[in-house]
Length: 492
Image (cartoon, rainbow, N blue to C red; front, side, top):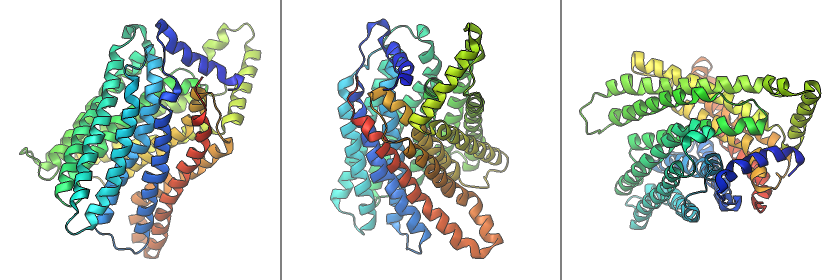
């Protein structure tokens, strides 16, 4: 690790050693991150490439295609991004909490159960959907995948909840206390998702490989809006200022934002559950859409937009010495020059990781505006001018994936004591990831209008959309190759 990295690594060690509590080495969670990268490059993004290319070409899309869509979405949320976030959080949060990981011996079980269950689902669901009768083996594999994944994610929930009760009083750990509502929300959403996913797999095994669409939509919303986005916002609020050289995030606004996000997610989930086909409650679907789903999307979008506004304001001041630090220095000009040299050295060592993080938050802002617009239309008219697929992919690919691509090359070497393969690969993920996100989201929003104005452009829209999957795959392959040397280095 370079000298420039020492403050960050020392700060993390200091956070963990408070109270004399021993911390687990990074080796404990590094297999989770390696598995996430392999699932992303060999599973979720590979299926995305197959889906977008097959949709761009005049290929018949049968039940196999729908089953592949569901398997791909689940692999992305609970495999690639989910395992990566779980791995980072099980290493980062104990240090922020000032406590040891409660049950470190559960980590290999979490990894084995989750990876095995995701593999079974990715294999069995499309195969079951392509056969007319469905082999009993594939039906059993779907049920086992739902049960195994439920066990893995419930173990994660137990780790989070025990961590909240461990260590010194929460009031003395202000950094952890400020993001605690987001951690609790993510744990509860993950617990609900495990139950729902098992129910979906039982029904998919009984009905030919396809989970019910309302249940799958709710499962996607719990994974994205309930788990990944809250964790991304919470951990960014604490780690991003340290790793990107920014001023501290204002903690006083975190609890109010968390309360609004809690309410928004509750309304959205109720709207999706009550507005879906076949719901057991005698509740008009238009009411669920207008008065539950609409306000839920409006609140979630507003909270994300508020976070992004603060982060972009902080990033605009990067490279300038914070005023409160300059006021304490006897030689503020010399300190400012040293600070600028430090940020320049960071860019040479880790590439344009700050630009990647900034682009991720721009995608989050764009997706938040789409959620706000959809919420307003649902609240006023009962229908949105576009599907939720656009803001969902804007958040999943544009925000979560690019945020991982930006923070991981800076954070993981600090955890492991190793180094990334090349800062040029960080630049490659910047261009490839943003291009993949644009080609995935913009055709969903503008493709219909462009085709209606210029019918001959339909082939161009299909071609650009088809390229989004391979470009996304190239992005995560670059990330995996860049992080692999750091992940193979023994933790200090």
